[in-house]
Length: 592
Image (cartoon, rainbow, N blue to C red; front, side, top):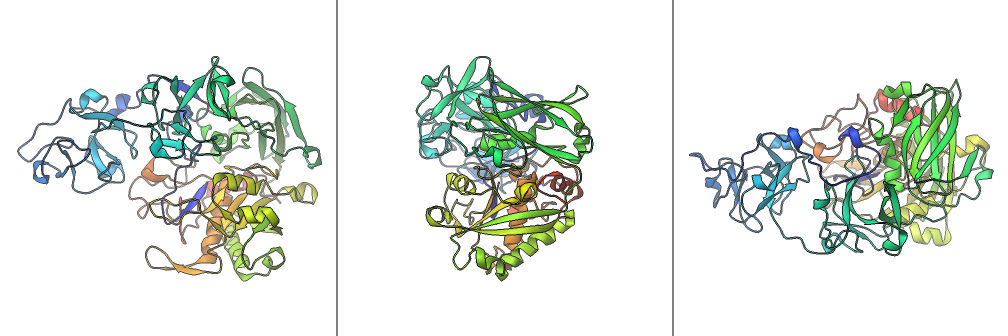
């Protein structure tokens, strides 16, 4: 996850560690051809445009001037043919809009728009469309789409009819798609068999269907999704550098092969275990997705319901999905001793897995800190460098709320070609390649149970709405504990605010060491398994009961704004709740 400085968190593709949503479909994938999200919950609708009343026309009706509209504003100009009645003020959430309307983005800014269930309920020239800021559909001007069909190679969003280009290198040469689709009709198809792939957690997108690898362009393979059908997905058949598995101080089992798109892993849990992490990782780079865990009492934990958020690592990284059990305190009944079976959906022919059990909850966390081309800082000076030490002290101050202190800290230099290539992070590929340079620490089992932290000169991944961009990124949610040298083996931070003082958007002076320490605590929180308390637009929340939810007034009026896992960087975002503490202490990286 990325933490943005003073701006909204951009939704990560293959992502987002967004929480919430309909927990009936939070894991797994299915193809949807005729699903109506609005259904019975969409409310009552008037057919056709509203008639003008003595006090003005209803919201969504045609108009020529502000005085024509009951709510005080007439939106005119391209593409609002005939004008469009809306409210005087803009909006962020549906709660800012009158009953029966929803907040949506438009070429004229965020407006309240008339809700709808079908095109027939919108006036001529308008269609029933998805709202980017609401789960409801709204009447908006119809704009004839242009550009490439879904599944085609692309370089930017504006090249694609569906409006989104999934970038290279995660999707080789780019991949046009339509996000948040519900049916095949939502996809930019042309003459192709493009359909809506539904993965839960708001992760729906249009994909190119296939029967074999020959149906896909270079860099893609036909990924099975069941029923003898597949879609063209990035070819992950790359070696992940796990050739030294026998050098680890715990057992890593490899060589398991999928049959017909499924694979099972059997494992035992000891009677004195208080939490554990089981990590499947496809050594051949193929995608995987957890399906279920059969427990000793015969019941099953399924990952397409309340546990669906635990499949986010696979959606982010494809080849790996650490599972902490129980993931949250409310799932304590999912911890049982005895024989278990983890079922995965995958085509991997070289699946590895390893199991880490905890008999007590942890009190310390060890760090391997890598210095990557930071001016004036290296491994030999970092231990006594005031800005670095103050940054770590702020991290520890926050985590002491959870009973966690920093244990051993080992500093390393990244030099040569790697330092030249990654001292400035410019892409997702840079992030993956950099953390893959991490080395297995000495010191046996205790040594490998440590988190890798990379400090770079700067990060130029781009901000949102003019923000200053990402200042920290976690390559796990949670990350694979005790495994080093993979594309998800660590967290990355910019060092540019350390030792600095600067003004925030309100003109307040910010201590850069404190801010970096808070961001470090936030991203390590992701790596240990914590989600954002709330996402933008109020569309997603973490699975915990004791973290407040922001339903309106984002960000300043949010009740969770002072929580460590609020999705914006802020000097006051330091609070940790009891249930967040459980998540932190249940992870094997926090140890005695």
